Image (cartoon, rainbow, N blue to C red; front, side):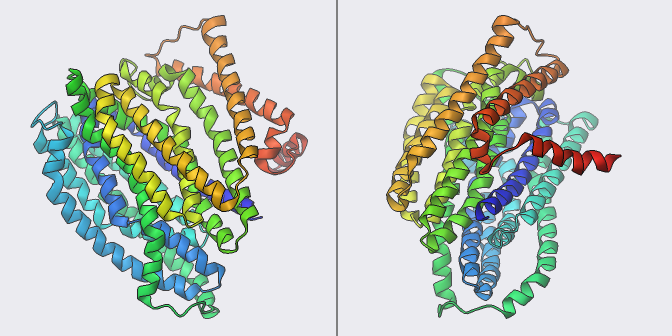
Length: 548
């Protein structure tokens, strides 16, 4: 039952994340059309450092609160859970204000650094400074949103977090598109003004999410009141001791989030430098495609891994508290199997049809887009597995070991990124990220096996089957389209790309689920026998009869 609940919660969180990212993807095409690759680069120069400061502002406390709350709820000590949430909320507000001031003051040095030490490439240092200052205002609100989401997730309530993500993104996208259209097309102003408003949307959107979560908290408090009355005191700890315990959970989680953001931040700091050493003056155009367009596409499948990781942390923490290692192993199996089964078809489709996928969302005449997508797509599965394994490490209290592995990965990325970019361009940045995350992942896997007696033989065998199946289907579709049928697609026609991808995706999924059903792989993924006749009957009774 706990596995089903875990997957249900992961599904809700992932659905919210994917819908949020899909909304974030919808605006990219018109936004790119309005501001160009130069505008996308300027937007990314502000957004990437902003993510780093968000990680520093939250200090991992929201997920730390989630873990803290789940542990004390398991002991029926709801009073302690609620007490730490209230204290941490005040702390988050103070830290958010401090981080806003620091980011505002550091905006000019960061601007010089991301432009490779130059005062101007295509964008200039003053514009980069201003967009960083505009986006820094969101730091005052976002930490408070994060703590509310962590509190709800600790109570295994995924809907408030998912809904707030969707509302936040919807508000942000609407504000960006309307303001950019008015500025560029109606007022005929330079794209930089559109970017100023685009980064300010982070603050506007954060306010909408915060209001929604406060309303949800007010509603939830009616259910929480009876639990607080029945609460059992499970300790004699002071507030200071509780905060020490919270930070013991939170700091390693902060390191995980910070490490992920640092990989992207290192790219931001070294991308233009690497290309200048390479003798290429189109670095900002390529960076806009790499960091803005392709990154948004890749993060859609990665959202599943992130949703599973957030949900997994709570269940692994509870099982580890009870020393239930069988349950821990089963949760890990389920998370990795589900993640690979769903993500791999998306990754393979991106790799065999990169031009069609890119042209569907962006400008088909950008030669760099499909090339970057082809190289970047495999990183989605590595990033997803990384989120899941990191979550397991936090759940089994191997935070110190996790921090060491992450520091090793980030340090190697920093040391070799600029050199690899100067030699291989964007492929160098992708290669550096892939190798460094894999090193951290392998180190952590050895520690998980040692601590939980995790039997990796079965999961490796299943993952090999899933990988092999996807590679074979991908090869069949590639040969069918480009060798047998010799399709010559007009990539400038977005509707043609859509129809082409729709047909191939439908064919891919039909073959994929048919083979999975016949071989019994679907039974393993679902955790029970999958009966097609039973599903058809259920769908007919639930939907068809209701229609008539």
